Amino acid sequence: MKIPLDRQAAEPVYLQIRNSISHLIQSGGLKPGDRLPSIRQMAHTANVNKLTVIEAYSVLEADGLIQARQGAGFFINPPARSQPKRPSTFAPAQQVIIPNGHATSFLEISDAILQAESQPDIIKFSSGFPQPTGLDDLQRIARRAVKRAAERLFSHNHPQGDPTLRDQIAQLLVQLGLPVTPDNLLITNGSMQALSLVLQLLLQPGDWVVVESPTFHGFLSLLRQVGAQIIGIPMTTSGMNLELLEQYLQSHRPKLIYTISTQHNPTGITTDLAHRRQLIDLAEQYDCLILEDNAYEWLSFGPTPPPIKALDRCNSQGSALKGHRILYFGTFSKTLMPALRVGYAVITGPLYTPLVERKLLHDFHVSIMSQAIISEYLATGHYRRRLNLLRAMNQQNRDVMLKALETHFPAEASWTTPQGGLFLWIQLPPQTNLAALAQAALHHRLLLGTGTAFFADQRGYPALRLSFAQPPEVIEQGIATLGQLLKQQC
Ligand SMILES: Cc1ncc(COP(=O)(O)O)c(C=O)c1O
Image 1 (cartoon, protein in one colour):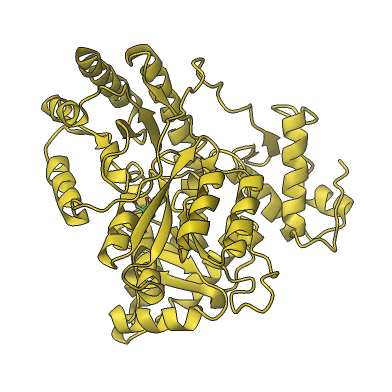
Image 2 (spheres, rainbow, N blue to C red):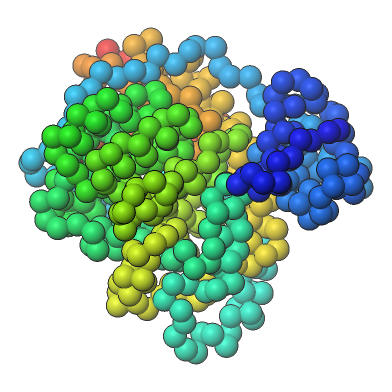
C-alpha cells in the first residue's frame, strides 16, 4: 500500500497516514475485513518510524474504522450501522434572542434535576453524562494512582496542573490536529471552572457575548453571573447562522463568541471545515475572541474536522491576539467521571499567565488524587479502550432511540441525527405544552431535559434534549411512553 506523505506539511505524518487510510476505506479501496499492512511493513514502505505507524493505527482504531485482532494484525471494520429511514427535517425557524428578563438560576435547575434523579427507577433522559461502566477498572486504577501520588498529597502542587498529566493531555490533543504543548494547558476543576475564570478575566458587566441558540445552559448562567449581555444566534443544521452573526457583530461589537463546534450541546451538530474557517474570519474582522468548548469531542463516532483552535492563524497584524484568538476547552466529565472534576483549557499567548494566577488565587490547583487517576487511565491505555467502548455503545443506543422515535413520535416532531455525543435534540410541534409534558413524563418515571433551559430567554421553541446514554430496553420503553404522552397533547 502506497501512502503519499508530505514531510514539509504542518500536518503530522501519523495524521497523514491516518487520513489516507480513512480515505481509502471511505472510497471503497479498502473493504471490510481487509487486513492492513503490519506495523513493520507499513513503517518500511512509508519510510517512517514504527511509532508513527502505531500512532496512526491507534487513531484509526479510535475512529472506529479498524480493529486490532490479537496476534493477527489490523482489520477494516464493517461500515457504521445504517442510519434510520426518516430523514431529519430539523430546521427550526427562530429569531435572534436578546434576553432582558429574570432567569431561573443554575442552582435551581441543578437542584431540581438532582432531586428528581434521586428517585428510584427513574429513566434519566435528562442526563448529561456517560453510563456508569468499568467500575472494576476504576478500583485498580485508583489504587495505583494513590501509590503514585502519595508523596505529592502532602504539599501544594502546580496551579497549572500536574506536569505529567498536562503532557498526556497535550499528546491526546495532537491527535485532533491541535498542536499543544504542556505550557499551553491549564487543568481546572471541570471545564466549567476554566470557562468561569476566563469570563471573570475578560468581561466587564454590560459586555456583549454571542452564543449559539440553543446552547449549554451552564454557560448561559456563567454569563448572567458576570453581568454580560447575551446575543443568541440561531443554530441551523450546519451550525450558527453566520449571516445573522455578522449583522450582530457589526451592530453590537461583542467581545466573545462562544461555540461548541463538535457534537454541540444540545443539538449534536458538528460544523464543517468551511463553517469553522468563516467563523475565524468573522472573529478576526470584528476583533473578538472565540471560546471553543468541545466537551463531547472525544465521543464522535467517526472523523471530525480539526478544532477551530487548530485553524487559529497568525494574520491579525499588529494585534496582541495574533494566533491566540481562540481558547479551547475540554473535559473528562463526558468520557470518564464527572465527579472527578477534571477539565482543561488550551490557552496560547498573553492570556495564559493571568489565567494561571486566577486559578492559583481561586483554589491553588485541582485535587492531586483526581489528576493522578486520570493520568493513570491515560498511561495504561484504559482511556483509549474506554473511549472505543463508549462510542460503540452510544452509536448503538443512538440508533435504538432514532428507531423508537420514528415508531412512536408524532409526524410533526423532527430531530437531529448526531454523529457522536450523548444527545438527540427534538423539535416538538409548536402547540406542545412542554411544562405539562415534563410533569406527565415524571409521573411515568421519565425525567426529561426540556429545551427551555438551553435558550437565552429560557423559552425558545418547544424542544427536548434526550440522552441516548441509556440501555436499549430503557430507551425503547421510555420513548414509547413519551410518544403516547405527546400524542395525547396533539
Ligand atoms: C458544553 C459543555 N461544556 C462544559 C460542561 C461542564 O463540564 P465539566 O463537568 O467539565 O465542568 C458541560 C457539561 O454539561 C457541557 O455540556
